[in-house]
Length: 580
Image (cartoon, rainbow, N blue to C red; front, side, top):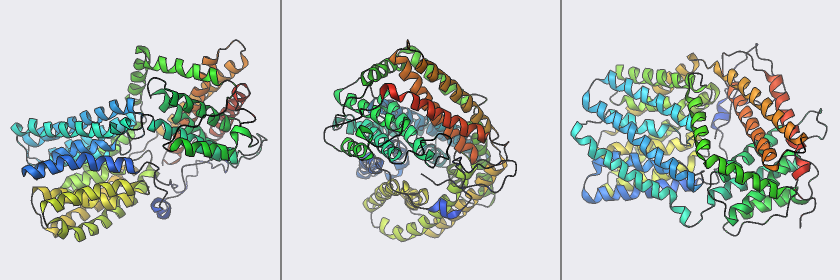
């Protein structure tokens, strides 16, 4: 969702021209450039409008718009899980609702027990850090931790009594339950919708790779590694989506066969013929993404073995031991050696500094500064710099939009509700183009929420928001620059070791004639997953400052060797040479 610029020179890190890097320079132009909108932007946009409209209009009817902040906490849960198959989405969104209620409960109890601004800011910063780590570890996003932090931080500074808390939490849980229904409602119309979109993306990425596979000579400079990385990530995501989708259906069987062809097109790119032809892959992607029947691809050698392996892997994942392994993996991501720890420390320090600085300057709503700082922290400092620029520009422009819309919102309570719903839709419609563009809509919506509790002087709201934005962004990025993440390179080294082990296992199964299809397919998918993780780790480390030199030569060699091993599996299960 953002371009990734480059840090200033680091003489200790030697750059290789062949190695794709996440670092492109701290250039405002790249951070603010608009991209194409997401192919599913309308899903979270419509979901959050529907999930918010019913509670909003209900409270309007009973004359209690002052309670909207509590129902909004539940309604915003409808933003999550739109890329997940419905079986997993049900669990994920339920977890989001419970996590939202838990953070809100901590904030409400704290607000009812103390009026100390220093304590409230400390609790807000701690909550922001915990929410950041949990969202990154579970990879529940977008929108990630910012929504949780917005809700919990705002609740900290709202007047509260202990006796009111159960009722307020009940409103959040009720709105969250409705948001859960909204998030799952499309399953009634198109049960395999998320799987179809994931497979369509894999086919499209494979088509790009098939159209530009790079040189046949493995020792030559390869101009298209980015295409292979993108195809590997898309195919891996498609397999993960299908594995998590539940029991096989005829539609999912066809989707699995399509992923077999997409995978073969990128693991062994060659002459664009037959099922691997880019135009055929794109045609399949268009039909898969559409509302008609899923295309039935021609048989590919090894497809039956492939699907048998998928069924076996799905059974393992759903078994008790598979669930235990998933929990152990999550705990490792949260453990003492986690690369997420420095980001959590950045979030804690940055949010605390932003809140205390705004409080010292007499700003009445320091939680805006806390949310601004929390929103900056991305995978590395380069991406955090991009987000700083995006957030600052979007908020400042959003304040101007708020000033223009405020008179309209004060015509009637219904006009205020309609304005909030409009900006909620606009934020999700625009944010996939660039974060700053979405922030132009998020800012007036956040300011209008204050109007539900009573009218406030426009000048005061605008002045506070501008000051909080500037101070929050400055202190937040300062914390990101001061708290180094030296574990980023260590994560690369761990990913390199994992890739070497996965490649060795895949080579053993390819060379072993007694290896069964389930084992071959499992090791191949494990190698693809390790290459995706390696590229992610490399891009993250390349955007960090003040760390030891990256093992760039080894990284480049491991990626090339991994893709060669993937290609070596293709003769056993490549696509049909001549597709009808």
